[in-house]
Image (tube, rainbow, N blue to C red):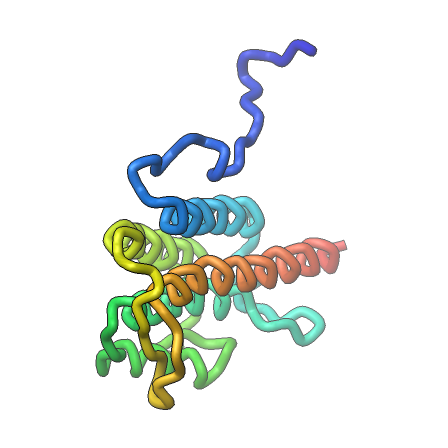
Length: 182
């Protein structure tokens, strides 16, 4: 089979041979975040800012998922590091819960701003994950006011699975929006 020189097949992050300096569990989380950003960029391309805030068929807006992905990544890694949430993190969490259709200040952020927040969050997370991946992943940690038990590894892996769950919601909502365009 011959392909044109301009065609470069997509290779998923876990097959790119990257992050070989990071222990396997951390590497997998980093690859999951890379895949998430790839999918978010791909599936939101061409959507308008209004569409990103729309609730087609009652679905949660893409804007909410993008904000939540960025901010929850930060929160989960805070717990993985053995810390509790700061006042700022709690305020951002409260703003997320205050309404899926509006941002933290009641404004409707443009798609580019939302994607930038995700990318910044993932870049910051990468440094934390690199450090956490070298720790004993069985080290106990607690989550939230109820001090629910987990471990460094459990929290770190949850960053990946929680992020990809919300990416799936973004993809589904984007497909619905495109289908409804007619």
